[in-house]
Length: 151
Image 1 (cartoon, helix red, strand yellow):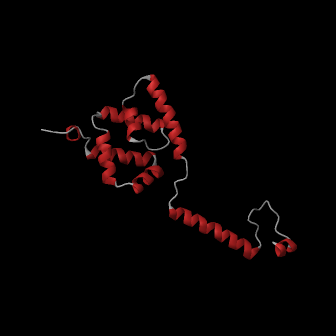
Image 2 (image 1 turned 90 degrees about the vertical axis):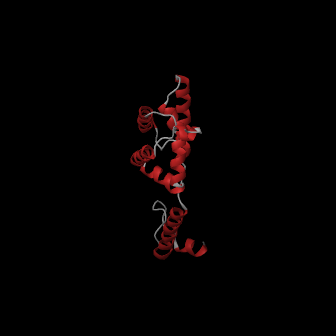
Image 3 (image 1 turned 180 degrees about the vertical axis):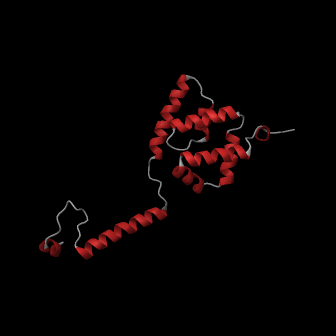
């Protein structure tokens, strides 16, 4: 006999794996970032606990809602709200939160490796400019010899 709410109604690992696979199809880059930044077993367990008590129909409703309304993978709370929509006021509040959250998620999330490569490209462009007298910004005229000697 189950003794805790966690044991009572955990969503099966198959359901979570299928849900994560769909997230990977719907939001490939954002979901890859989520997976890369998190222990997959811990993430799976959290989603199993977070979706506890939802029916298959509700999970399907949540996925359809998120597919149509989210630019990024939902949090557990966002998914639950989509799976079990509340009053019109609650839905409006959730829509406002989703919009604000979407704006936040648009902030750069580069890894250090991406930043290092971007920096290397800029340095190569500067070195090419110094070697070849190629203007960095094509809209600016190249330096005159007098400007180059005094700069």
